Amino acid sequence: MTQPTLHTDRLILRPFDLSDAPDVQRLAGDYAVANTTLNIPHPYEDGMAEQWIATHKPEFEKGESVTFAITLHSQPALVGAIDLIINPRFKRAELGYWIGVPYWNQGYCTEAAAALVHFAFETLRLHKITAHHQTRNPASGRVMQKLGMQKEGTLKEHVLKWERFEDIECYGLLASD
Image (cartoon, rainbow, N blue to C red):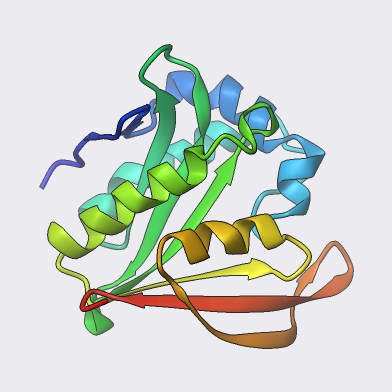
């Protein structure tokens, strides 16, 4: 299976290309973005975006993940990224995303996530999608709630982010929901 391109009213979700690396470094490397995610480093050094992008195709081909660049229909601007880390054994995936600061509060994340969840259930035939966010990032939780995800619990001081233990809120959505 070749990774598809997904379309929404305002967005195109497509595979990343190495030419996206400068925009990834600029947008994901913003302190505000890195601060509210678990896996984005800060500072975002030269070469990191290229290395990250190079992992996408092999991981998709192995059925381990699918990662999309979020871009606008109206212009080729990179807005952010969204992915599913897939656990085929249990027919579930973890949803993750980041949006560049210039594109915050415009509904792009919810729109992209809705398209990816539909793809996960309809095309990949997954049973469950999970997602989590740091409790100090309630905007990410609102995206999950808008998707119809249900809060499944809070994990106290579950992760260490920049020398500080963080509480994590966990959400889930079943295909039958």
